[in-house]
Image (tube, rainbow, N blue to C red; front, side, top):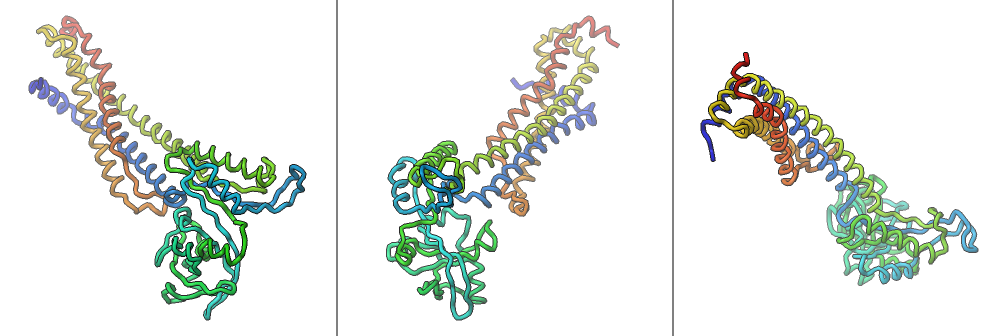
Length: 409
């Protein structure tokens, strides 16, 4: 039941020690402010890292051939390993429950020219799904689509710097570039979010078109997109299984990493997550240390409060107050101080974090924020902290004997 007299007494106790209460409470506020702010910035750093280096649906397994560095199974070292469409079909049919999609690429370097310029550039034959596997963004026009694939169209998507090289101060969409001996129509322009100038001097065309033009079943790479419900460890296991089979198919030793190149983005993500786990631990240590200091500070002020009110508590107990009444009074005061200043710290930190926005993107901090569940956890910690800070002085007050209290000077 709400007891107005008790709340007046608590307020009177706080008011009589304004400076001491404020300094102790600010320790709690600062602790939670530091914790929430650092936690929010940590989330922003993780968001920024994933935005820059891990595009959506990019936990892919990429395989490409190389040159063997050791002899194996009767074959000499120095062999060139080339993946082909048989490998593509094998992967696609062998793991239907684990694979969302499989695509392959044909990468060539050829001469690109028009009436303005000419030069040697990298051109890659790709599937439409490839757009979701690269950290590049189409800024005008479109990417290669299924209609291009079905019609073996001579459509081409060019990098931003290619557009500058061949179509200065022009809109390149709809214009033509000669690739080798064939004419291709520009259907899109892209920019790279992380690859720099080299990535923006690349060109993409339909895989089916390149396959016919170069009359080849060889592929430069095979890219596997796992199903969405697979965890990072399951994706890593899938990558190991695919790699094992590819090494058997092409007689490449298990230790020969230059003979067959396998990039598992899930493994990179696991390493990234480990870094952020360490970062979270550091934040918890810093915030926890500050919080402990705040608890000690609140505990000290309550000890002084109990000491100053020894006679008052003795009189209360002489008039019939139970140890529980005294205990709850001191705890209530400690919890009130903690909650008031703690909420202040949480509110200020949340306000700061939520208003950072994209102002720190140059430091890879993007859209920092704190989830509601984290704020709920912080509030629970706050309540527990208030209880702990008041528990020892409250127990001390509950043990005061009326006769001893009345003798206290």
